[in-house]
Image (cartoon, rainbow, N blue to C red; front, side, top):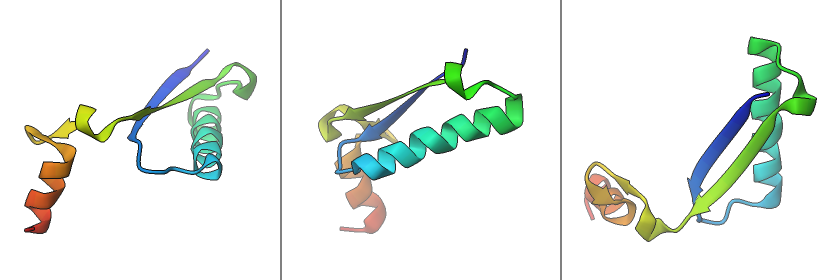
Length: 69
């Protein structure tokens, strides 16, 4: 009974995009690990930008740094 938790920043992923992620992850687990889609759980959590960090910085600052702005 696989459980997959996807965390993304809340930047406007659409219902269709989330559905595609759920479908794709479920199909991947079925194909690679022979897991039953009926017992595969996929949860998508959207995280506020200020609660996400990368490279020791809040994600917004990190993006500015790597873009040179």
